[in-house]
Image (cartoon, rainbow, N blue to C red; front, side):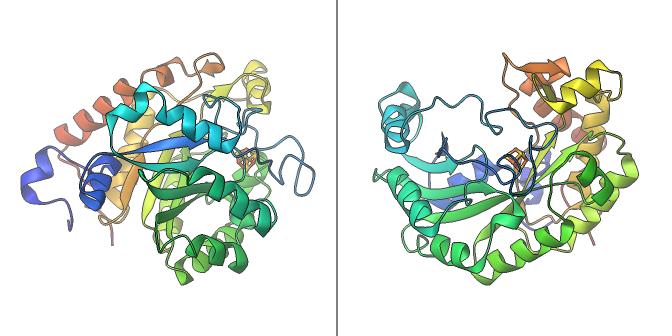
Length: 309
Ligand code: SF4
């Protein structure tokens, strides 16, 4: 265990993002979630239509209020939220935030970087929307900001990949990570637990696949069902059964114990939109997930990376 020292072992069983950001920036640092008015090649017909089967019509950023990018940032700073910290990272969350011309990308990122309290730029995207030019653009912000890219993988099982209609391959993921590594940009993959037809073996294989890459962080989500998605249809027809909380926690514990002790865990739960969540109901209770995972890891004496090799 490298960066979880023995003293902290009882408190931090894995590397929490908040702690990492506090150490990196010297104080509490929060994310401002932005809708950059992007679309996705898996929605506009370039790669697919309808999107991934679990993705909501807002491109997985349902709590963000639509407005111009600069207004979203200004509104945040004019709200009580800005009183909770002095440093912030703008996080382009909805849809595919590198899917545009270089000129437009630059305009959109610049439109968010309008306050001295902003110390970082974080961009969520899909692996087939990263290339050298985009990486170079992102790199150009690193003189002044901490830059990171979150990339969807969800699973290393290509069959599941087809079933969930992600419309990219594991190879796309590997290429994207290599490009971002070349430019020294932190990579945070997203993986999902409880995808249709997946077993524990799939989780094991996804972890093995992830471990072959040079990544700096990880987001773990439960596959949850939101309204008006293909997954909801499958659920209604009895073709998909969401995970129970205990199964999710056990899978999370497996992932955490088998990934590198050096990477930062950005999330162990997704923020399901309250008005759109269909199932599982436990996904409403973030504390059940976070505290349940802490309890499980404490009781079984587990910690991040203990089985990593
Ligand atoms: S790639 Fe992302 S934004 Fe596009 S459909 Fe899939 S989950 Fe939604």
